Length: 329
Image (cartoon, rainbow, N blue to C red; front, side):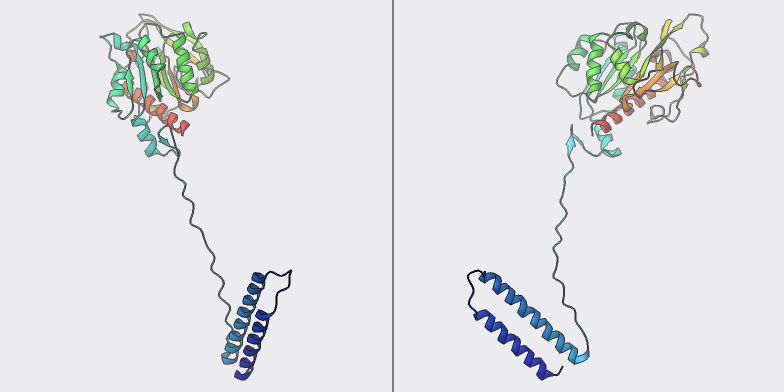
């Protein structure tokens, strides 16, 4: 196509556009729509002329530039919090939650000046800050008052080791706490006396039951009272401390050495420690359950070397609180 042909084509397009703009609109036509259509037509004619011009000049065909598309910015969704802890648990924020945990302690050994308060000493050494840590000692009435308070306890510890009775409605308080997602550690040696009572729902949901009483006479073979780890990879035994099994007792009490557990049909309990390495469903003295939020120990802490037992209690506290915060998040 030569230059004259191009100019002729352009002139014809302009004439057509002018005539169209001056045409009267019919009653059924939308004037704004017609103007839009004419504008589109003129734009297409202009593009055709440009393409024809370039073709005549050198055979190069230029494709029209597509209209820019709008890509919206991604929507920002802030992290949501639950109970003061961010919704997606990571090791860092779980660790921070543990440091600021609310902990309620009942430890009846605190009432005996001849006994080392293992739980209290362990909690103090862990340097909790930011939360509320209440140690009621052996005062059951004070423990009941705090357990029923408005504080949202993350962990409740019951170390009922001295030959006094923690029972009845106090176990009901523990059940409600666990049912609401809380963590609990229970040290109890007298299940044979209370297994059919208020602690029964806790044991059932956990997945353990009373197996048999565990007696120790004055003339005893120490190695028959050694404890074996049944799952050496369990975090209860390795985080944050690697703890060897209490293999030789130094008993404070004789007669009743504690109780033995067996796995029940319900629950998710795992026996972590027991009297025989090849018995993983009975003869247990240490179990974890409730997705790790509960630990139950049925031997007396003071009957074994405190250099082993205190790091083991630190593991209990760390593990149950970790599982608690993972659960609520």
